[in-house]
Image 1 (cartoon, rainbow, N blue to C red):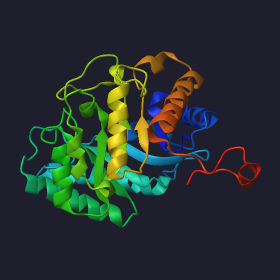
Image 2 (image 1 turned 180 degrees about the horizontal axis):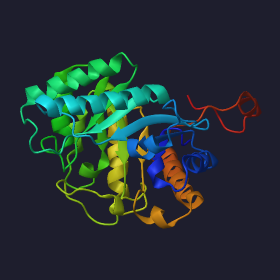
Image 3 (image 1 turned 180 degrees about the vertical axis):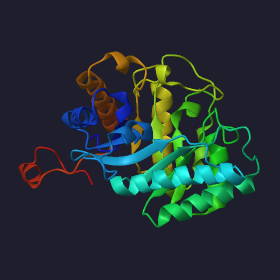
Image 4 (image 1 turned 90 degrees about the horizontal axis):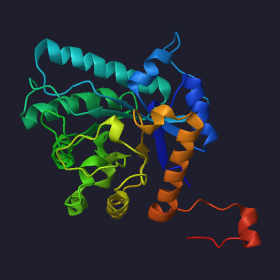
Length: 289
């Protein structure tokens, strides 16, 4: 029931092996990670033993797009390095935050051109790229702006990562999502918080709780229902990086994650797991078509 959900490895403590074992022990088969969490664990070949856990997305903030000259060349090289890392780790998705640099170009054409260039580099490696708007960005501060850019770019392996924070405001207009192509939405990042939020407010690590642990359960349910209506069938990621999880053992953090994912799967997504042939014949639970 929790196969649609991933916990960021940055929510956990200890070595990479300890974190991965905690993920597996909680019943999760996949995870997401910040690039900074993994690079120090690479072996001499630049690879990792992920202990049978699938890495579904690698997340980084490198301020890539909209630069010129030597700055552009430098950031392009950093992006290429991340794409190669994704390929070596068997990770299908690189999530990049929109640039925070004030010196970056604010012209849509320049940003689109840079993302197209990144897409071309990624496609030959079998990697997709998701671009994430956020309130701290220089230009792409909200999801709909990012959606317009991605639509203009028109690349099959270039899409969007949606961060729930701008949709937790009670006045957020979920109807805006109706025009989104579900194929372009590659990841959804969920969170809850203990305080009200406005669209311009950045939800930092100390404020992020797992979905359903804070004040915004109704808003989360409404958002996920809307995403289901527009056809999103991808995974949901969440993290507790510097909040309460910082003082809890890994087993307790993952127990919270399992409760959150199970609730969302059963009560919000209502996605059923396939039943075994034995259980179907026994009639223990009727088949759901």
